[in-house]
Amino acid sequence: MKLLHKPNSYKLQRRGDKSKSWSELPQDLINSVLERLDFADSRRAESVCSSWYSAAKRCVAKKQIPWLILLPDEDDKINNHWCKLFNPGEKDKLYKIRDEDVEFANSYCLATYGNWLFMVAYWYNLYLLNIFTHERIDLPPVESQLGTTKLERTLKGWFCISNGHRKRNHKDIIIVSPVFWIDEHTKEYLVLWGFGEWCVPYSKKGDTFWNQIQIPVDYGCSHLVYKDQKLYYLLKDYIGSNGFIKIFDFSGEIPRETFQCGGVPGNISSLEDYQCETCSHSLFNKYEQVDSLGNEAMLFDLGITVLANDYIVGGFKRNSIYYKTTCHEKNTTQICLFNFETKEMEPLHKFDCSSHEQLARSLWFLPSFKQT
Image (cartoon, rainbow, N blue to C red; front, side, top):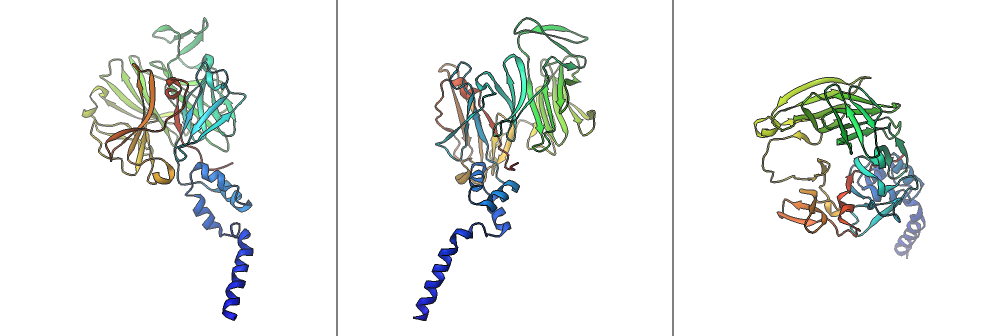
């Protein structure tokens, strides 16, 4: 009887304490669990109990599964203030987000950084937007250029651009390789973009204008990378036969050029690889065949690789390249992945879109896991 009684009382005790067990787990164990969750699951974990909620707010998850943002078509008046988010870990689900202050149908996403998007709206109004909190930071008007290059709005849809060497009228502004950084807590930020062959405008928190890094005559900005307070950018001439790389240090009040390397972009195979030590990708590499990405996946549109060693849970496949492909004859756009292991291309998901342009305007972003 005693042998039977003790187990029964033990079971009753465990059953009675079950509701408390989740909140009474050791803190390091809770953190270990939360660090392995992706963005969607980390949000769900906050609702387990108060201790999990507090831990989730402090925790930075180790896994970053890229999400895809889908903007409505330009003529979509019904869904003008809505955008959709796709998480590869939940293939059959699309999240819809509404923001009354943002006309998504009349905006384009130029670049992403964590939960923040660098957006351009009608008439080239630039702003930063936190897709989850709806925080918005309006950037200076594009014509407020402080430097040699002058930009003036003329007739609707046209701009007059000039410097000491040339003057031209353009209907559109060419924004090349836009990049930005923002601190989630202080909201300090730095935004940079290549202005064709004219200059590299940049603006920081508190600025009411765009400062400029001038581009030498007969050259144009080809590609920008910003990491750890350093700007790496590739310049090339109009025919692509000559070019060079510059590095600017933005840690001080005024950016300081710290490196310049000449090269021949038209014949990249003759150059040594130039790898940014603090970047996850090269500014440019030698042409060479790649047979494997290992435990990483490449987001071709962003030019970066991400860790993807657990795609069964995360929905993001390792050793694959994610890219967009457009067929102009069929007027279609697909988001696909190329799997190095199977050597086959496969569609990412069958999206229900009103036109191929909606997928063409899509962009990957890496949700931030540290909650504020």
